[in-house]
Amino acid sequence: MNRLNKPLHLALALTLSSAAACDAEELVDVDEVSFRSAIDNSSAVNGIIINGGQIGGTSLASAVAPNGDDIAFMWTTYQSGRLMMITEGGDFFHGEEAVGTELTFATEAGHYRLYVDDADFKNGGEFKGGGLFHYTINYAIEGENGIDDDSRESLCYDGLGQPTQALILPGEWDQETGDRLNYSPTSLTAACRHAALAKCAEWGYRPGLMPNTHASCVRMVRADYAGDGVAHTENGTLIHVGDKYGINKQQSEPGLLKEAEWGPEGALCLNRAALRHPELSGCDDPADPQTCFPEIPECPGDLGDLKIKLHNLGARIMTAISVDPQ
Image 1 (cartoon, rainbow, N blue to C red):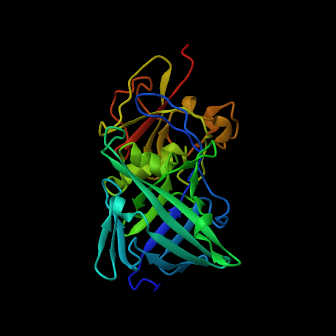
Image 2: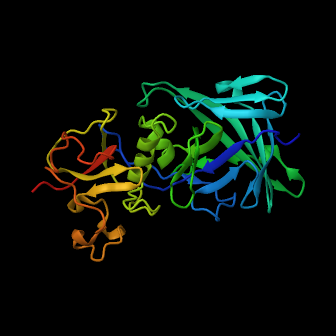
Image 3: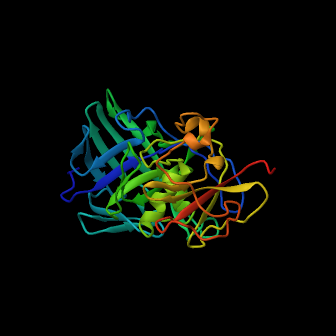
């Protein structure tokens, strides 16, 4: 199997956080999703980045299509996350036809292989913004006798320890900060379901079509107020989500207060009385919310009226949390 003669970019950005969030119309508790620790991702918070040549001692060794031919070019569609590929022999595979694809990577510790073992198109009734392809991705690590294809395990596991699927998203994200590096359709990220990257795409903010809104959502899911990659939430936290486009809508109700307005760089304004977890937010005094993130302005207006327009021109998304009505 020959190495690709064209750059293939693949980023494995699997768990930006264990942050929980909710649907715009119904509060839910979301499971933590984790990357299998057997593949060493200790050099970055959220996974392994492979970018064409070699980064951090990891490089793509081979990419093989379901028919056994080397892959010349691989990309994903912006709307549905459909995996597409052309082989060196000119054959074309896409969507469910991508099942059987194998990608082998070389690291300083040895080789490992990713397998696209199933593809499931979930229709638009299940997600905002139309249907999405979900892929079952497994992996195997090289042992003394090479890579044993029969020893493969799931790449993604949910909070109950059960295998879960991944979306194939266009682009790459910084593993330390959550910053988006690019949204090129030929740079691919395998994003586990229920974690920030995949969750925001499922909510209707497709990164290739709405890059700034998707970036705002990633900050929001992780409560990354300062936009520095530090999450200030924990698994099981319930929030309401709304946006300026009407994709997700919030309804005013007793005890529901705006928490923040969000842009790609973090929170553009805060209602410090409604922070999800002041004790996790680096406040000088968690008992005094006004000591939290003093560099971020307070959100103006009636914070209990969630139907008002976003005040910040750069804001894409708004969050609210439920508090005990007085």
